[in-house]
Length: 294
Length: 289
Image 1: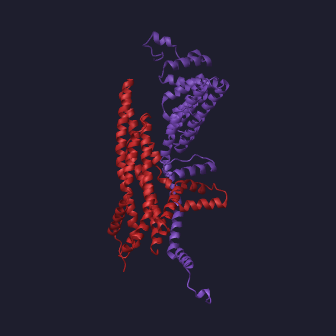
Image 2: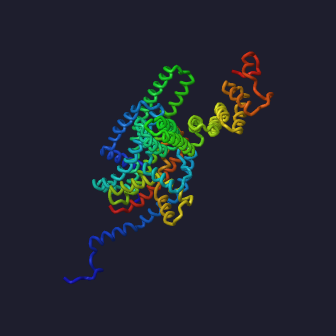
Image 3: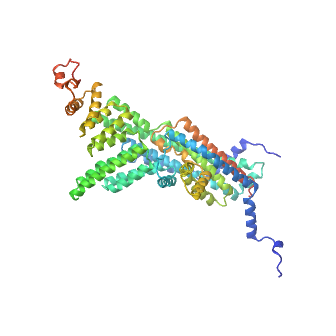
């Protein structure tokens, strides 16, 4: 008897995964994040306006990246062992649920959790950035008035300058890039957990691959340019380039903070690259999991 | 108890585990998974390369400068160890440099700014500020420090001014079209090293990037202050062009008059004297002040 593909079933599994992760108190990080953002937003008032806003963005984006990568790795690594331990996995798979639907449900559940967390943190971050931006602008205009140089041109220039460093749509696109990177890491962790012998193994290996993935671009370039001379170097670099994803493709945040614009073409390329990895790793996960002895 | 041949014995636990693992690893599905994984790995390389190139063109990713293999690998491992947190770490090292500046620890300021600029080479403020600390603050601090031997003071002054120049030149390898860095370099050449030819060259770069005429004029002033006739000619051409575009500030007129004398410009080609314009404000031939 063949079982048809059911999006509703996948969604049910995804919702259950979100509930399971929320019960693990993973979202407590949100509170920590809010404290960090508010502290960064109102610290160092002696710095120039540009530096104040840059520091706030640096700290907030840093916290967003840490949150997304840690949740992607740890929560995904915990899922399969926890389901095995609780015997939930047997209950689910004894019903007419194909294994790939179970995996997809888990993957989507983690992505929904990370996405929701990032949206909530983006809202908190945007609010603090907007308040800070207006405070900085008011202080700068007051300073100009005190110096007697508050001409309309000077104020317009200041508005433009602070506006570019402050809250723009670009900031949200930076958050989207962080989500895409987290999605790739989640799919990678799921693939590793399908053949891993323990949760610790999944966590350690995924962290290692994530770190190497940030330098994969340079390894690949050196390999493709033929910079390496010995056979061992060539083989090792080729192997690393093939087995690890290029996570630096999603590291646009550094330049977004400096005011570079994310174009729709660039956004499309990042989404396409993330989709390629997620689909590829999901297929490999399915092949590893479909006949796994549980 | 008599021993039975091994082939008839049931497998012990260890053998069973090995047997199971070998079967597990070599199952058809696992080989398929490995094949798909390796195919994906090979197929993704050109996609990753194209994506990286596009994002670099869009200035969303920082292109590495052409460094040697060893330095590239150093940069790679540095980038990899920080992941996407380079900007945050750069901010932290910048704040530490700020504190060391307050403590007047110039060596530490330099090393922390070096780290900061390495982490975020595309942010011009860091290069500008690092050079300013070395060429102005550190250099002057050593020059006026009476606890140091006078000979050594001069040497330390020159070394730190040169360090400021080197920082900006390194920054310009990453940001060759940044007007702010070219202006900072021009100011150091002018005010600290009194190398007016190099200062003029830098101002011409700023003019090329910003298309603002005043920077061509600044280059003209610098050439006019140089000591060789070739530079005077260049300065004369730039200032005369500014004069002809009705940019007739007192400094332009003074420098032009000065250069006309130095270059022995024939009288009919010289600009009118300033006093003529003052005597006859309606005249169109005099300088417009």
